[in-house]
Length: 271
Ligand SMILES: Cc1cc2nc3c(=O)[nH]c(=O)nc-3n(C[C@H](O)[C@H](O)[C@H](O)COP(=O)(O)O)c2cc1C
Image 1: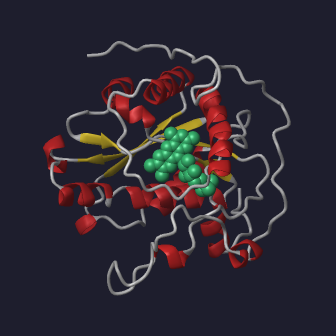
Image 2: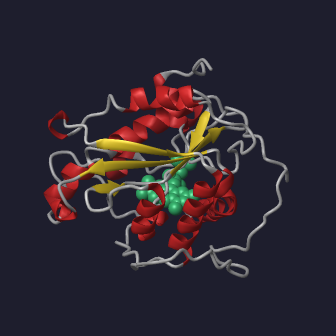
């Protein structure tokens, strides 16, 4: 499929976390994924070592098991997630994200391709220091995002997720990833999108986050939370409303996000 007719700026501003508009019925061609990977691997890595690997899961049984680990990670995380107190999201948007995320929770196993980006390490100790972490994650996450941008420009939708990492060892066993020397970075569902029009997302104004010549010299001024899209940003990209899925699929599982009974995910054997 030829890339969509989007400018670089349009790709950068309209690559959304796609959940409800993932086309679960349309297979994703292997060649398209490989094209995105070729573009992704132009991303930088420390000393150009390119320690990355990309596991693409299409087997239905493996997708189902991986989706269960995702659900387990969301509903029964192994470690408590520490919040730093900074949250620039707005509450209304939070509710919309929750609804959209619920859809992904319910349907993740149906997404045609689940991508698990990985990075090789000498051993897990390599990440003990802050600089070690920065070097490791800095050498794979840019490629992951680059993959997602390339996917967007080809009519594919993606969403960054991490909860399955609470059960990384189980995922490694499932996918035969050598756990001690390969770190998983994320779990990215990949599918064609239903429609291709996406809009810029709400983001913090730049003058609230830019710190010129030092932290005190402006930026992040008292006013948190800050959010919203600037009008210039909105007007620069096509803004026709996104088509809704219009009830093609019923919600099949209870909500893990609050409100309603929780689904107990299938428990895989643990070590
Ligand atoms: C580190 C990280 C973890 C995320 N985890 C999840 C997740 O578990 N489930 C989910 O549906 N979206 C997840 N997201 C997607 C975010 O919710 C999304 O990027 C954010 O709301 C902005 O969405 P937008 O670009 O469509 O505005 C995650 C994103 C990041 C960067």
